[in-house]
Image 1 (tube, rainbow, N blue to C red):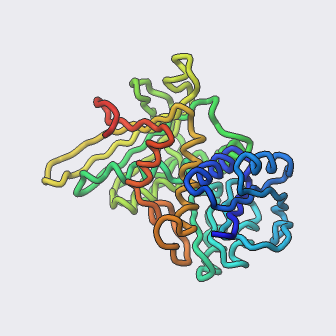
Image 2: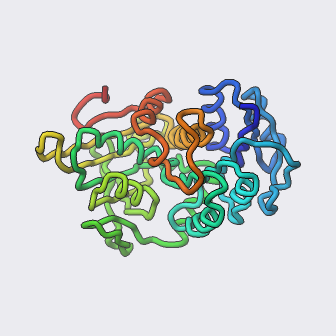
Image 3: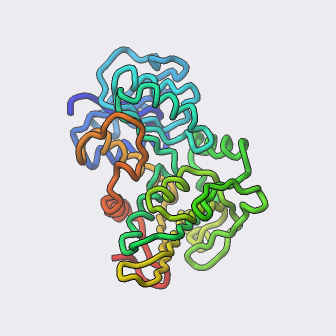
Length: 336
């Protein structure tokens, strides 16, 4: 591939880690690190090799860029004017975003639909860019029917991300304190009091949390067919930090349904990364970008896509192991 991948926000935490993963997987893939601070973007580009740095102006439909050929646009920051999407659509380029979230997704979906034949649009504004959804879907392989999916995410209170990630969380929390679940097949909004729930960490500690309105809920519900889906989110001291170690992230995935032999089946998994949410988010973005570029599988058709529609869950779990994530079934050792 001779044309470069344009990574908007490429000098931030999510963008720079994504670029590093893509460089590791595809050493000759050209990358363009785009940000407001050219010096910072240049330092990231210099660390990668086969990369360039540019400044962008998100208030402009052309992003303030000199016309150049790119292969895709990956947006790792909040683009309130959707100019990253417009830039990609005007040039027929694949596009990926992670910051719109369920509460902001309407304008992005409508904009994508207006030019649905232009190029594929990957909406990956899930928790950690869809990696939790992919891990949960891989865990359903031993089920014939999934009736319930419940996910609990324990994020350390010292690991809320860089400025862009913190801004996303603040924006979403300012819009609503309601939660979203699927209950008996119906997507249902929960009032704040009903949304409250504990999230249990690996050692059994209960952190106070709540159901949150995230794209993971409809993605898990529609991909598995489960009539009951809930995602809870808690911020507090994770097990590793309570031990005096660096902050980790802990994700509890509970599944209930019918097994391949017709038996009732309940399974609980833990996905843990010792370095917190940052590597998981970068992995989710990198997997999506790799797929959009046709570097693994065929290029997706034009239209709007979500991570689980494009990325093979088993492949995602293999990549999780490569970046140091630990995958345990409750009561057992590490997952084979």
